[in-house]
Image (cartoon, rainbow, N blue to C red; front, side, top):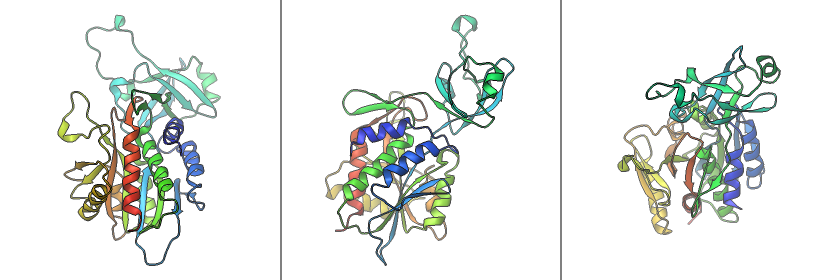
Length: 336
């Protein structure tokens, strides 16, 4: 499979939390190549990979399909759209961003920005209640297409950077979805040590809700949450970050299974796959937190792809990290 093209297609599909249908439909079509039984259950895309042998442990590979965005809260008399946030948006960069309102049909817009000439002194970070979107349409025209509660996403496409790096929106966590598809590509024709189920879960950005229902439905013995984590950039605390190009970040936390963390590290070392250790002192704020406490609990771990500029329209990843993460997962899953 063309990993870069897969990431790009997934990244550019719309799917704010609670409105994941477009992105989920694309991911479902891609997953069915490897999991013919794949279908949508409660919003989540779920499929079984390979032969499901009696007596083998059940392993879930999870990546979330939703992205951060906005919801329409009002249309003003002047024709501006007011919004609320869906997930943890970085409000510092919102003014002047292009967006798409997903109504009965898609409408392009821009977030209003007050020119510096008309401000006095430094401009404070806007509250979400201060944000307004301009489409050039009147209130009456907008009301023909836009309804309260419609989702809004950044209007952005993926672009190449130097080397194997790309930038775009919704790479959190569409690169994780692509990573799992590539993992299945690597596992084709291989014997596995587990009965493998893949879930592309919804509503992670608003409280890991899809993973909660998915964990209850599947009831796995082991769960690997493949998400993104912080890649070091200037001004950040290096001790809390990984590095672009450094390979997958294997989670270690009191809320995770140390047995699985150690097994992933051993698999990486045996296959000569570079990896990074991500230490968290409590919960991980990923879907792994849901799997570890569902029913009688699964042995859960995080395997994260380093990413810069999280929850912005210019997230940055290194394709090498996605490939290395898939290789690690395949090594962990295959038998012997």
